[in-house]
Every structure is written in C-alpha cells, then in structure tokens.
Image 1 (tube, one colour):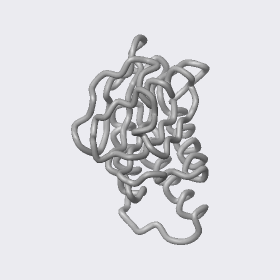
Image 2 (cartoon, rainbow, N blue to C red):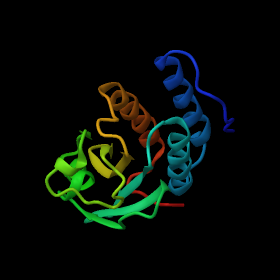
Image 3 (cartoon, one colour):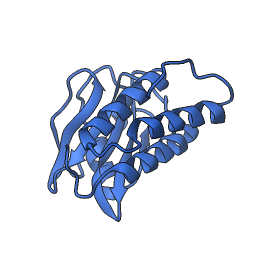
Image 4 (tube, one colour):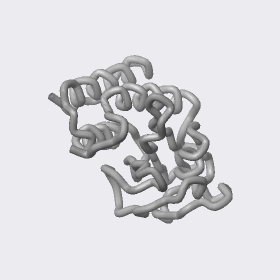
Length: 166
C-alpha cells in the first residue's frame, strides 16, 4: 500500500524509498495498466519541478499514449520522431536540457522546456518509454537518469512481453 510521506534524507535514501514504494505497488499485480498508472502517479508525487510524467507504449509500429499524470498529450508518436520516438528507436535514454533545440521536437505542451525519456525494454524487445517533462531548462541530471533507469528496470521486470493492459 502507498503511504504519502515526505521524502527525506540523502538523495540515495529518498530514491530507495521511492523504489521500495514502487515494489510495494506492483508486487503481485499483473495488470500493465494498473502498474503503469501507479508508477506515473508515484513519480508525479516524488519528482519536483515536472509538469508531465507518463508512458507511451509500443504497439509494434508506433508509440501510443498510455497511463500518465499531467495535461492531455499527443496520442501517437512515430518511431524516430521527437524525443520519445528517437529514444524508442535507439532503445536508449535521452536527457534533453532544452527541448526547443532538439531537431523534430514534438510540442505536446508549450510549457515544457526539458525532458528525459527512458525506454522500457524487456528481453531485447521495446515495450514503450517513460517520458518526463519539466518547465525548467536543464531540470534532469545524470543522477536523475541513473535513478529513473533503476526505476524503469524494476517496473519492466513486472511487465509482460508483449504488453497486455489487463
């Protein structure tokens, strides 16, 4: 069960608390929709200075909007397009300090200025991406990237490949 509390202590202690909460939320739950919804809500609660956090799921052709927290978003993103599509196509994390300088950036929310996208890959297969936007330029650090990659690794372990939502 999730308990709303302030994240205190060192960065490592705060991150470990968030990872422990993720584990508690997804343990024994097979619903992809439920796990992704709770993961996006947890990150929305945990992270500061963000305006959107959620998932785009790979349907075999393109990325399709999945569970998220924030304003309504773009529904479909082709592989190789924008930050999400490029991250998915490369199967690598992209940490963008200024999204307006990224070639082909897809502006779903004009308030977003920086972005981090982490691909969800299981057994070599792309499942989707975790996308997080911030109104602050340069919001995401290398330390954020390491934490979010650990977060998505734990989450991806609980997901079935190919994805089924329920």
